Image (cartoon, rainbow, N blue to C red; front, side, top):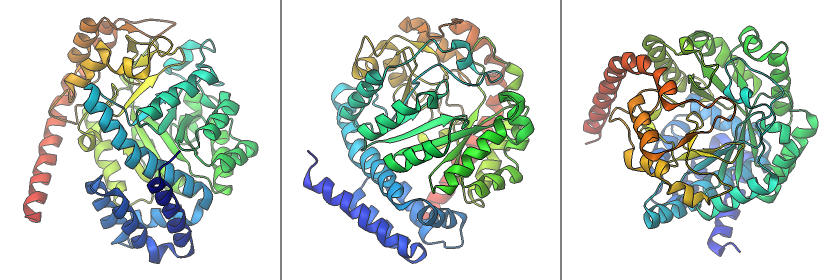
Length: 457
């Protein structure tokens, strides 16, 4: 049974959002007052930015984005996601996570990524998941148990990867319904989203898709197959028509980095109704990896600057998994902020690092978080004082080599297991050449922070 304070807070969210629905332009500040009251000392810096850019600057792109969310998303969906994400995953959940971290001296994640299945209806070029075929699946009961364990640790945010998660769409909806206090996000190719599924999303209210695109039609179909781009766009039209929240997932490489960060691409996503875009740096993982697709230092610097430029001008929230290390203190894997459970039950420290010494069918989540590999992450983070070189594989490959050797973790690639030396050898040249550019960018970041601190004093 939830305490009375929680019920009061949940009721407060419902009333505040209903109030905002009538006049979001005028009442955004009142919503922020409510957030400040219930958050206390939590996330003070983030809330400061929210107030500055969304509430106090009505001409800003962030204000436009907030008003769009409040007016164009179904109000009941918005109430559920806001309650589950803000109150459960951040305020209530974070407090519980901190208690467990303190008690057991290990990492406790804010989010859990898991693969319901290794099956996929596509066979995208360079995708390691395609190597697994349809052999591996987590049962409904296993996923349900992972979520129950996670909530005991304070985790209310779950992200589905794969494979193509929506092959299991009936189970996914059933899990949304059973765990109505959680937020579920899924990376998906979008081809299985139809009107019937949109209606189910409206019913459960706590599922958010992130549709994968490689750019425009030629780039997307070139990697994913003819007709995939148009099917993804059709899915976006269905979601927008039904007033559902969704975003985009995009992997940038040396081949597509300019088109995938172009203004035309960004504007097309905003027009389609997307509210966020999550960029991922190409990782040379698996037997079909293509190291030549790794961005050059100049290309990665270009993306670093371009996404930050759009954050000040475009009404869509852009996240850069690799270059945003400066905002989250470096590597967030190994349970520090997230971990990955594959369709075989293996607990990987990262969705891109397929080594494990724990399986959810043999250990509890907490036991896995206290295993030698996960404790090596806990004890080693951050892996670099320069948080623009956060990863123990991509930018610091010797660190991953040592962690795998010292903990005895094994490859979780079921089709073509690769040694840590094979994997890291693809990253050595990249790490060496990114260092100088990353150090220059990091030094500029530090100077900006110092200048800002001096102005505040």
